[in-house]
Every structure is written in structure tokens, then in C-alpha cells.
Figure 1 (cartoon, rainbow, N blue to C red):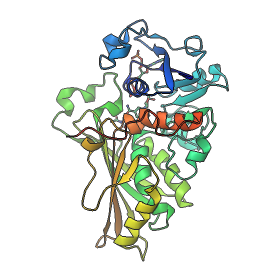
Figure 2 (figure 1 turned 45 degrees about the vertical axis):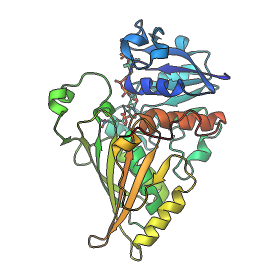
Figure 3 (figure 1 turned 180 degrees about the vertical axis):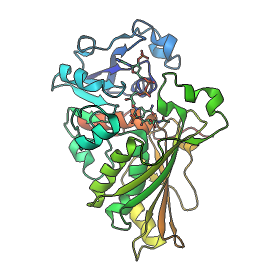
Figure 4 (figure 1 turned 30 degrees about the horizontal axis):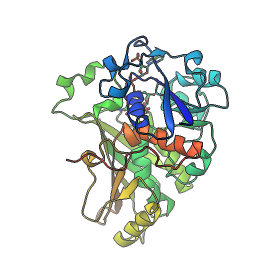
Length: 342
Ligand SMILES: NC(=O)C1=CN([C@@H]2O[C@H](COP(=O)(O)OP(=O)(O)OC[C@H]3O[C@@H](n4cnc5c(N)ncnc54)[C@H](OP(=O)(O)O)[C@@H]3O)[C@@H](O)[C@H]2O)C=CC1
Ligand SMILES: CC(=O)N[C@@H](CCC(=O)OP(=O)(O)O)C(=O)O
């Protein structure tokens, strides 16, 4: 075991998923585990599914408890990462699952998060053009938001190939774990079970500028994004339905060929066989992204549907995939390439 990793926020959903994946990673050993209000409690009490780590006690989250590791995964609320990362020094690989270092625009950051912008780190979505190269040898990684992962991977091939005009409309459903483990009154079982509702409607969701940033970079021009998230009565998973206007000359064949070519070498992002549509169930617990494309000729729009597990490829798996690249390991090491079915 050559690499030692600490996980801050080990009592949360994202931290727990990072640990589940690290338990199966042959090159990374698990060092310190830290929490916030749960510091001092054992992981067995908090994350009983992580049986091999049941006796590990959570330390408080600070520079002392996180020091002495090669990699530190931060799975903390927004705004908590900058101070911790600064105290860790430049030689440590810091992988931040929070939003703090994702956006390039300080104006967008302040508008959507309401605090001063901490900075911008290499973006942990290797499949986006240019991102994989920027992750090699970096010591800082900003893990994308779960919706931006699902949406950016769905639309980048069409925009990069010039098949689509730069106006995306996205409606995406997420499982409740996307909101984290802390108690939220609108997320009680009786509010969520058997019911669906949108939120952040009208451009208010903080993932809107992150999606626009990613798509604009691949399109080479500003992409306007209308994004409507919805909450679905399931613990995990995102299903994103994304549409963009088809440019004249785009055909169903050219669309399919473009996606097949763009994704041919990707280990985790798969264009499903024709006629088969993505479902959250089939990617559950895996680092997979399933896509399907169609040309709606009557509406003149390209339709792309993507499915990801928000906690795996949408957070912890994406974090580990990017960390593998930064550490010089094969990108797929320790990552589940198959989902659970049924
Ligand atoms: N859930 C998801 O699908 C996704 C999450 N993320 C990001 O990952 C990060 C973690 O999210 P998630 O796991 O869902 O959230 P949770 O609420 O489940 O977990 C939050 C974790 O942070 C700890 N924590 C809270 N406040 C503090 C503090 N002030 N100082 C130190 N530790 C603290 C908590 O500790 P304790 O419980 O001990 O108080 C807990 O371990 C967030 O930035 C989130 O945006 C990113 C993509 C998707
Ligand atoms: C269902 C749900 O509430 N999902 C979260 C997104 C989770 C995510 O990607 O997280 P961060 O950008 O916060 O890291 C939300 O909409 O705020």
C-alpha cells in the first residue's frame, strides 16, 4: 500500500461513499477519518454498511488530524474546504467534493453562493475535453456537482461537434441523498415518498452556472442553460433529460455517430444500444454514466438522457477517478464498472 488517504466528512453520505470505494481500492489505504458534530463516535454507529471500518473513531476535522496523508478527500459542506486545504500544504493531493473551487467566475460564485470566491482548481470531470490533461500531476481537484456531471456529459459531444445551438434546456430528477444527511424538514419521508416536486426553478439553482461553464467551454461560445431540478422519491440516482436546438444538417445518424465516436474510449460513459433508455436503477452503486440520444425532428431538438448515481460517479466515484489520474494510477482503479440490477 503506497498511498494513504484521509477522509474529512466521513459521517456524511459523500464521505461514506468515498470510504466504500476506498475499501475496494488496491493502491490507497485508509488513514484518518474525521467528522463534525459526530467526532468521537465510531463509524459503526454512523455508517453500519462500512463493516470493516466499524471500530474506527471519528477525529475532529482540522489540519492536525488530516496531516501526514498523501491524499485528503474533503466531503464537507460548502465553504469549509478552503481553510483546511490551505493548512495542508501544496504537496498533499486535496480532493474537494464541495463546490468551493468549481467555478471560474467570482461573480457567478458570489451570486449563487453569497460568500467570497475561494478560487478555482482543476475540474474533476476527466471526460470533458481538456479536463483529463489538467488532472495529471495536480495536487488540487474540484469534484463537480452531481447534476453538472450528469448534464455536462450528456451534452458535451453535441456542442463540441457543432451539432447544436448553444441553448440547453434541462429537467433532471435526483434522489434524496443528493441533499446530504443533515435533517431537512422538506425531505422527511412523508414529504418525499410517493411524490415529486421541482426546486430552484427559474434559474435559481447553483448548478446552473457550473453547467453553463462546462458547456460554454466545449462549445467555444456562451451556452444559455435553463435548468430545473426535481426531487424524486428514491435514495440515489439522477436522471437528466437534456435538449438543445439541432443545427441545420444534423441527422439522427450523424448525432449517433458523433456520440459513439466521442465516447468510444471512455471506460465509464456509455452510449446505450439504440432503443434502450437510461435508468437510475442500472447505474446504481457504479461509476457508470448511461446515455441515449434522439433527434426530435418535429421540434428541431436533440434530446439526450443521462443516468448517474449521484453518490458514485456524481461525487465519490468521480473524486476517486480524478484522484487516480493525479496519482498516476490507472484511471479505473478501485471503481465499480458495473451497476446493481434489478
Ligand atoms: N450528496 C451528494 O449527492 C453530493 C454531495 N456533494 C458535496 O459533498 C459534500 C458533502 O455532502 P454530503 O455528504 O451529501 O453531506 P452530509 O450532510 O451527508 O455530510 C456532511 C459531512 O460534513 C461534516 N460537517 C458538517 N459541518 C461541518 C463542519 N462545520 N466542520 C467539519 N465537518 C462538518 C458532517 O459531519 P457530522 O455529521 O459529524 O456533523 C458530515 O460528515 C458537500 O459539499 C456536497 O455539496 C457533491 C456532489 C453530490
Ligand atoms: C437532491 C438535492 O438536493 N441535490 C443537491 C445537489 C447535490 C450536489 O451535487 O451537491 P453540491 O453541488 O452541493 O456539491 C441540490 O440540489 O442542492
